[in-house]
Image (cartoon, rainbow, N blue to C red):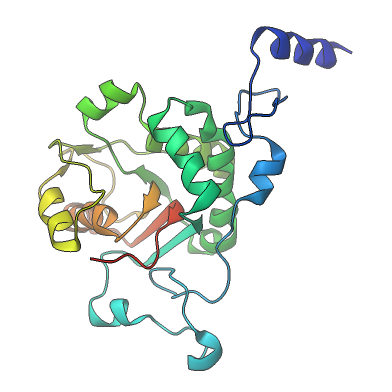
Length: 246
């Protein structure tokens, strides 16, 4: 009875609507995404490149087939995985989360990260989570750091600490619309790490919302590898963009 009254109180004084279908949402916590829309998000499945996590035709080429991009140039991480494809409803959800102030979407999106963590990373035994940092100017404009919120939610679910010794030291232009070369130039020297960091020799999992070409996590991964020489370095994101054209 007390739980029901508490729920009614929250619904009356703090009404919520789903950010996708605009229906009323009734949860104990303030998550603006209904169960119906959550279950309609498209999960990434099928055979994946064991390194970068993009779909590969292993039914033809055999289990464990490494994609051509990773064979031509190994990325600066050992393994990357994403929950879903960056398109349709998942893209809209992340847009609401990043640009429209719906910070409590960190709850359902963080839960999706936990699904991928348990499925693909639990046997890798990561020790620490490193969210991709945003620049202080972007933080002031947005009012929060969406990737840090995701990492903290994942931390509560998987029990790993969040490390904040990496920083976005240079404000960069948005990556959207830039080709691969421009993306790399835009991010060159954009990150720094505290001199007294505790990352050396650790098993590190980088957390971000979206991975497009891998340039952002790649730059951060290179910095971590130079500065900390980690034992293992992984990347976990909510969404992944495929068929990206330069």
